[in-house]
Length: 469
Image (cartoon, rainbow, N blue to C red; front, side, top):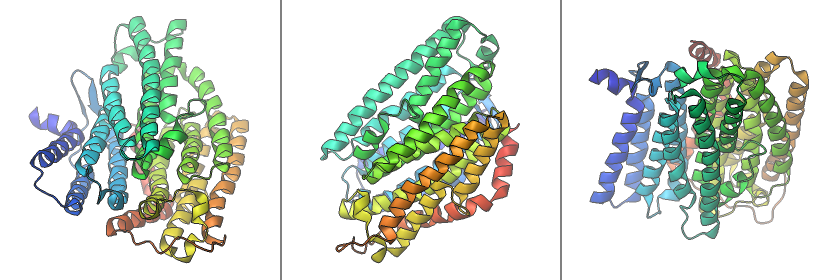
């Protein structure tokens, strides 16, 4: 029983051990050099990533409140991979920061909450994991204590998260009141066409939409992303949203399957608004973090397009695209983090002539933006092709046509950044930037992933196989 417990909760136990180890280091304060601490923490995160691929056991604990499957282990490993890359990206920013250990403790606490949320089989476990993953994020947004925008970002994060959590919790309370249980497996058969239950589902759906920052629940996103430090913005855009997508798939496909017609109509509207408005607002941005914020809103629309099919292919396409999205988005954020840490510049206009002195970073940015735009032969093209193919299963070709047209629109603003980097002239371009070896490793991983993942058909087939079980 003890061995089964450790294997089923392996991911959570490893993260807990690392968190307590970092807490002991903070109390002891024996290591003074930030660089040594960074290397040590990156090594621990790498071990956590590697451990995620071994000794995985399916099962459930606490009377079904916590469960694991091959799909859930894969989802957690995707988050572990993204967190490891973000840690490498943050090296240049954190090496001189006096609150280094606190940063990693908060990050790992949020990751632990996401793991509990993904494995939840009960709304109580889900909500505890959601709050554990959300509250430390507000502190991370305010990590640049000397910057007013960072504090503003944290306040907006707290208020929007509290509002979204209240809406979600209100929906959960109505579901509990009408079914008498919080367990997913027990609740699903009891959900029918009761108007109160449908209203409860709408509240729950809205709570998820807030966390995903899909239109019209997106208004907090750009301001929070702009004010937060770049590595935290990357964490919000990739890891936080990825975890919500994973539990959202579980909720729609397993818990709310009786409302498939209702949630398809809601997804239909959300997809159209998110893709279109995300693209249109991205065109108007000059701040690179706000630009990537609206880009992420549009990308969420495409993920919802795959999910809307309600099929195994749709779920598999969404999970695969999140792998591609992790490499592509973090590669772009890696370049932004380098420029921000060395120069403090965060506007697209500052990148004019960037290729003159920073060729490798320029190519990383270009390839990652090509991947986000879905340009072949990058991985983003294959990821969006799978999502659109899955979305076409419903036969709503108007939706597919609009989604494809928006892919063309997105090329305009992605190419605008690439044009600034490679073509636009600048009398004083950004000087040669020398990033750490950790950052170079992160950029190399991202560019390899953004190029090769589309040809890794075995990965998609594996995801499709385990998701269908």
